[in-house]
Length: 281
Ligand SMILES: Nc1ncnc2c1ncn2[C@@H]1O[C@H](COP(=O)(O)OP(=O)(O)O)[C@@H](O)[C@H]1O
Ligand SMILES: [Mg+2]
Image (tube, rainbow, N blue to C red):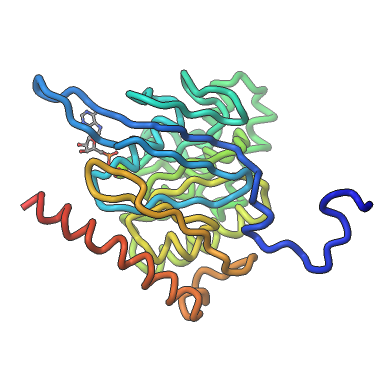
């Protein structure tokens, strides 16, 4: 009898490839915050498995707990109930297995782009020559070699995002958490940065957990899109996106598969956005 997995007549599809490759396991995780003497529930219990090497997006209305869930995966805050583990190890303190691009960019204004990119390596105590070489390589990969000596205030919004990405990539984490990285950028720039991100990711074996409020962006980039309901958030749907890889995020928008997936998920997401908007007025 042939060994399991050998002699397949057809190459595996992307969803088949990811099946069973569990990296992050989220079990019954909920979160409440104390607020003015009472308690605000940010997230209802969620269960989710994130496969190694996948690109997973969280999409949902503002305030549904997307950033809170990323913070818990990063180990910056603990769940009120439930557990998160990465590679079978419980996350119960800062999770050193992830790099985190937070919603507000955290570049230090008094350090140049190169110094910001190298900061995690400096903190880790690497030798200056190692840091220099790594920083140069990372700035080149995000197309910012000519801006190494610029301070954050001398960079455009898109350049700051690319610097933050280079900083996260500099210490080579196997998982990258990105919280609405392209949210504030114009539509054209977003397309360019999405394409660059896909290329970087497709040439790595990293896992990306990506938060966005843009459903089209989520579908075009991801293997799995997780749709959250409005506050207090809960998972409403987990959709596997079968669109071929490598993927062109721009051309992908014009395929029938994109259109069908968009309509299907929009039906789930639209009432949540309407409900949340109603609560806020
Ligand atoms: N540190 C905190 N203290 C109190 N409430 C918080 C805190 N962080 C988040 N929240 C509340 O939790 C909910 C979810 O927030 P968040 O995760 O930032 O949502 P999202 O990222 O989906 O927009 C919101 O109602 C928010 O006000
Ligand atoms: Mg957020």
